[in-house]
Image (cartoon, rainbow, N blue to C red):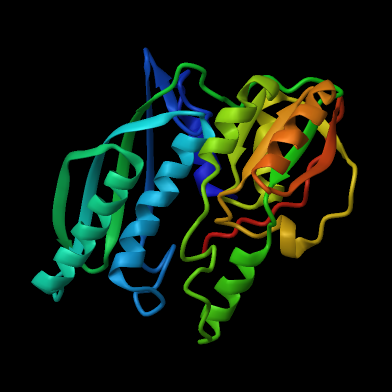
Length: 272
């Protein structure tokens, strides 16, 4: 049983289901980034950890074609953490806030056994992108090249080093691309749990199925924490989307067609 999916299914709010909750003219999203679940401290510097904690939260904002306004940051700090290490974490969080033009307006700090982050972002959008709206005959595609995050995680798990520019360390967000293609796509979400699992979520949310158009390896389909974009759109818009992707020098892979069936990928939850 996937406990996360079970918990979400037990909640009844009409705002649940997208990367963020749209309430009025604001979008609210939150994500956790916990030591021992999402990272080990020996893998990354404190600056890299804090930066990735914020980037994975900003990925939800980007996925909804939104702009961040404010963030609330809760930190669990280990008892043995030093003042200069706290400074490194805060400097990294504030640096990315400046980079993406939003303000950290508060949060909470507790003493714990591990270094854990829980971040809420309040954003806004004039044309939010949601997960609702797939129709029979539409196409599914993903941006970028998938698989490197899983590969590098496996290297870390056996004690090997990875490049400092690895997607596992530094996710690449596609905000400008999504903004440009928004008028041509109907649904979208970020790929955080792997292409297989996230495609299944999108299909479940729309009560529809698919037919694969290409073969996808498990190395690609099961690679979590990629933070590329999964999009669905009318086939008549494919040429427009490909032209924009080419202008960003961004690979775009069309991998499935929406059908009125119950087909799903064989999804294995990547969280451990």
